[in-house]
Image (cartoon, rainbow, N blue to C red):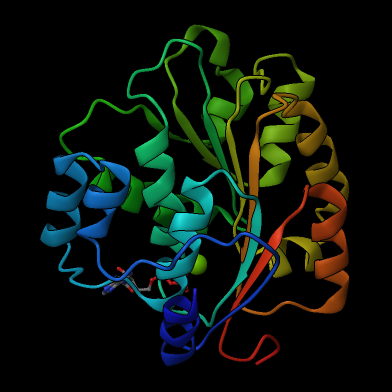
Length: 237
Ligand code: ADP
Ligand code: MG
């Protein structure tokens, strides 16, 4: 525990909460500690990622141990991988019980970019990774389509749920990426209804952002259970 806190300090990782898993020393630890499959380690290497970034060191073990968290780290610090990695490790490829993970993004561009990253990281495994396009929103029926991970803006998901083309009751991971922007852009109502539709009691929710204004932190606390806060650097810079 003493060692963990020295290690966190060295990497500028600040945490608040109890029972926090040790930060990752290396990506290899994903295998020794969490039995990570080789395809993922291979893909990380192929992407040129040698060592986890500070936010990845703490957020990955957190989500792997089933803890809800809100994670705040500067732009460009590798937050995408911090949530994609544990999701890919925890869900089943080609799972039958439909959608296992939802990633909410404030813009369509970010959703598309996150989808590309997810596909690169899942190379070699038969995950069904889907971007919620305009087409899919309008005429896709997710009850008849294999989909393990769905990446979207809140409006499109809310619409498909309302039209009863999308059932979120099997979702195990809900990620709000750039949550500061999501709230800023006024998606609070949509997020609320998506959170309610994700009715699986063992769901693990997480928020990622570059800044963590108090309003966002309050909202985060209201939708998550016993969430841990992870901050890398200064939370409002
Ligand atoms: P953020 O969401 O925090 O702004 P991104 O997830 O978009 O940051 O990552 C920023 C860049 O860093 C991307 O080009 C990504 O490929 C790269 N990156 C992510 N993780 C690592 C890592 N562990 N080592 C080196 N580069 C990384
Ligand atoms: Mg990001």
